[in-house]
Image (cartoon, rainbow, N blue to C red; front, side, top):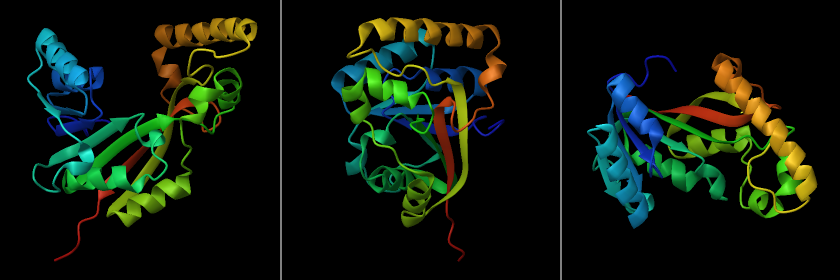
Length: 216
């Protein structure tokens, strides 16, 4: 999303210790805010911002208890949050309430549609089962229900090999970890290789939605 974050006001939900917000502040000139529920997360984020020279706001709050429109932003983000809720509308409604007119929601979740999700399920079944897969249709419908228009779905990141430490089959896991390390090394040497992703390969699945502006 070239240029979208430049000089924008950006809030991240579940934004504890967010290096993403640090990068946006230092590299894009964005005005950043992190919202997190935990005491530890808030304290660590404030320390991170201080250490990195970031002038940002850190709020301790329950996103579901915040009043819609009380404070609004150009862009609302969350990474790896929606898949922890069986019903996505509540999270997306909270996003809508934090958006300025015509603002954007940019969010992602692990790509549970990738072939590699089979290894995740095999080696770490408890971790896998703690995540909910939301289909493209479910996400689009949830966005529409709360006043958002889904504009784009995208895939990025290295191939999904391992998403969590192994809970079983340790010998197999060692081989998988070696492959995973090799894949990550390729990304470090040639990061552009993983910018254009694929539904059945990439480890990250992302979405961009816009707040619907009702004509007056």
